[in-house]
Amino acid sequence: MRYLYLIVLSSVLVNPIAADEPDDACFVCHMEMDLDQDEEDQLFVDYLKDIHVQKGFGCADCHGGNPEAYDDEDESMWDADSYLGELTAKDEIQMCGECHSDPVFMREYSVSVSVDQVTQYWTSKHGIALQQGNGKDATCTDCHGVHGILSVDNPNSSVYHFNVPLTCSKCHSSERYMAGLLSSTDQYDDYVNSVHGVALLEQKDTFAPACNDCHGNHGVSPPEIRSIKEICGSCHAQNRDLFKESQLNDIFQKEGLPQCESCHGNHRILKPTDDFLRWNTESVCVGCHETGGEAKVLASELYQIIDSLKVNLDSAKTLVEQAEIKGMEISELYFNLEDAHNALIHTRTSIHSFNSAFVRETALPGMDASEAAKVGAEKALDEFEYRRKGLFVASFIITLLVLLMYLKVRQVETLKKEELDND
Image (tube, rainbow, N blue to C red; front, side):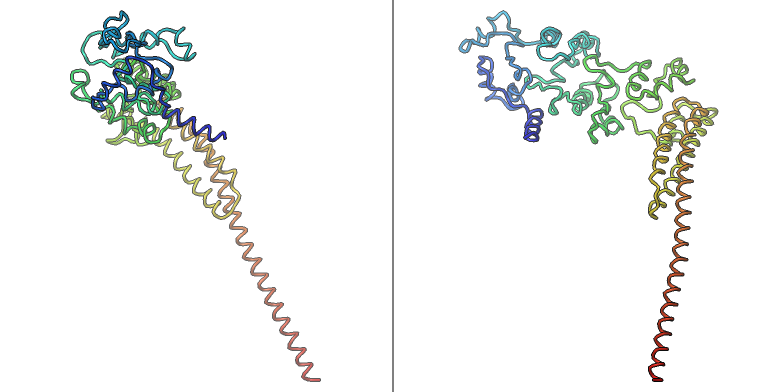
């Protein structure tokens, strides 16, 4: 019964049950008008699934008017003092803010909902654009929808975590719409192919960042150079802290360089590899240090430390696997391999200190753990060889004894036969 309940509950969350048709003059009239419209122009296709309707709100709660005036269009709209008529973008922000900025009112529906969305919006790039009147500003309905607004927790919502990149791309991927505002419109395409995009969109990793995790929600804004490491550091805290203590931190600030972005990029962030340090045309260091110098020496040292640990760990894995295949007890050695692997991860992170001595010190426990695994595996393999040779000797002796016993039995049988023949 419990499983049936969970199945029904999950189905409702994904596809909320439509509310009953309201006894509302606005709804009745506009539903009739929808019948003569193409589907894309209809207002009430998803209206009954709207979270506001689900909570009991009607047309007049947002648009004003008289929802009881069924037979008089003027009385239902134009003659009603509360009727808002055609909304401008600023009117829309104010309309939504009437409820969503009221903490007492919103507490009736959620004790955790934020009520500063409007305040944040006016500080955002979208809000500033609206104030300047450039006509290319995103408002509440551009992201959340109009009459079919779903809860942010609903997988079908346009602002559900997995859907945010595509929602943002509706504007930001349009060259025509973004002309004069952005120099490029390939952010979404870059993101899809990035380590973050693959994790979020393909692997469905709920912890992977979408656009709003870096740029913000209602206070959306491009990260400034000084804040990039803090934004990336909200997930990659150790990398951030190591970089802040490194000699490059002050240099980057003085030169006005974005910290993390300088090496990793922004929207098309690829999964980092050890080859980032390997001095060749693909090394990220070459972009700033074309001639090499001290940077090349440091990068080569860091690469060598990591590569040595990798080689040691790989050889230890090979020996442990060989011992396991031969049936030896090596379960404890896998703890050594795990310790070495964890040390390798920490060593790769430690390169953000740009201090070869610190990186070497971080790698040392991994070298010790992999050496311990190698020694243990070699002992197990030696034990196997000892047992194999012992088994061979024992088998030879047993076989020889069996053969001698066989010959002795034949001799006895021959003697008995001779005695019978003589009798």
